[in-house]
Amino acid sequence: AADVSGLNELQASKMWSVSGTLRGFYDDNYNATPTKNGSFGFEVSPSVNLNVPLQQTTIGLKYTYGLYYYENRDHLGQNPIDQTHNVDLWLDHAFNERWQTKVEDNFVSAQDPALLTGGGATQRSEGNNIVNTGSAKLDTDWTTLLSTELGYKNTFVDYSASGTGSYSATLDRDQNLIWLNLLWKLQQDMTAFVGYQFGQVNYTADEPLFTGGPTSSYRDYRSHYGYVGLQYNVLANLSVLGKVGVQYSDFYNSDYTVTSPYVDISATYTYAKGSYAQIGFTQNQASTDVAGLAGGVTQNQSVSTLYGSINHQITPKLIASLVGSWAYSAFNGGTYNNESENDYGLGVNLSYSFNQFISADVGYNYDRLDSDIGGRSYSRNRGYIGVTATY
Image 1 (tube, rainbow, N blue to C red):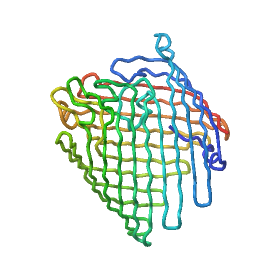
Image 2: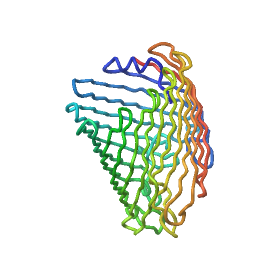
Image 3: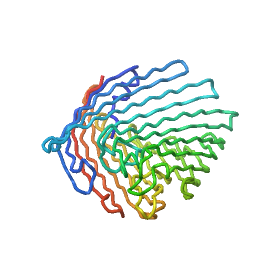
Image 4: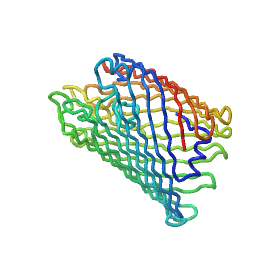
């Protein structure tokens, strides 16, 4: 939840680093379901980080393994251990002063929905569930005022649970997005842009969405995005980025369409050394695990998300952080058309660095989902305390 003071500088000065985290925790709803099951447990999380700076290229790799032991599941005769894998890979290359490229990839294998960002599941799911997100972009300065950004992003989702109405049936997919932005530098600290994106989402499980319902590919769709935006460094320590437009989605297998606003606005304010605040708002369409009933298929959901965070350096060794979010979702199509749910999240963390090698932290996370659809609403409280060693 928060970077540890001193460790980033240490890692930046070395080509490689290794670290290990040991935490104890209590989770009062580890399945993230309406019926709570709580447990004490512990987490063991080693990681290795590689950063290779070359003359015109920077290559990075980070791998983190997580092992989570739940005492209560062991007492109930269930598998008490969750295992996660998280791999980050990035490459920055400057062909020359005007042509630069950036390639990134993030691979996650986990069971907890909180770790499978972008997967779409709301409850814990057994197995090696995978979300992989890769992107590449090319930035080109054609003149001192005019530049372009050409990009591509792929998201691949694969859940282990299979069968009618399962997470595989509703969420397994291959998402592709390509975009082109035309940027014009209005002044030294202000850039305006106009852009277009094309998206293609193909559901891959080929399983019934619900009993008697169509298979996964019935929800395949194409999206067109048009938007304008502005990037403005208001002050040396305050930057604003805004993107506003429209998203049109065509579910071509069902003759269903959705048109909604497309918004991405954020502001970052660095108010002291090691201390900053960020706030943002997004509006877009996203996949959902809600499939619908015999009365009709739920195609996707329109999601409005408000988020914010504060990272405050109390002393050179003590850092406090607060993160929060609220997401309002409205379902599109089928039995649950225009039904909604609210998803709240809050995280608090306090981290203390004893020296450049050893740190400790304590934190609390709260999650709540309020849904118009029965059997989905839940609340979840998690608290933890731990120590991290880095070399």
